Image 1 (cartoon, rainbow, N blue to C red):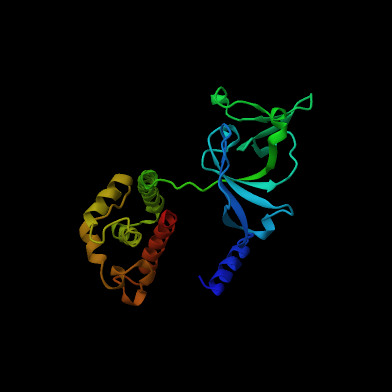
Image 2 (image 1 turned 90 degrees about the vertical axis):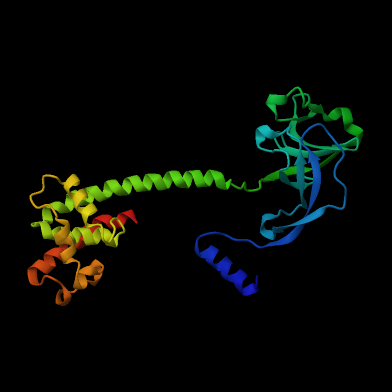
Length: 285
């Protein structure tokens, strides 16, 4: 991507109300800290990841990939990446990364009424597996690596199979609604039709909106007789076909009084009926 292309994308995002930031500042990412029983920390030197400078605090920061499930109740799962402020002093309830006796773990931090410090796992379903750790028992070998400030969750990908099912359901619903709206439109425009030939205006509008086949005069007449069976002027397929000449054989927007099988007031009656039907069908697209 060129610099000009990048500037254009940033401008578009800002115009849309977003606040884009360039990822231009490297911070270390360690693999991995265990969200389980303590294990040895990952090897150094770490990999580096780019973050926007505006997102970083004055204190040095790093990112850590977590393994294990001792913190699932607070949303930290195996394989997640957390961002931590190195050397920050924790408060009750903070999530911390702590190394002691050569091991490293991520847990919630708590100080009890006696002043004792504890590391508390957050996995109630497996509380027998993950033990609460009293830091005072490891005073000589405890090192607070940092306080976790953010959980960097990767965005999940949705299976194509699931989306295909939802789209097919939506398409089926749209088709059902469209047919219902077509019938409602026919019923609404029917009072405007004063003779059987004028149904051609309705037919042509439906053809334009792809709700009727271009030569399906019989199908159209059957539909009209079903929807408005009590109408005084029902269509005839042969009459419909005879009207499909000159500009009337074209989309309604191209009808021309000087090139039509009817003129003067009859022409404008046909045009008014057709435009009304188009208006009623347009919201379905």
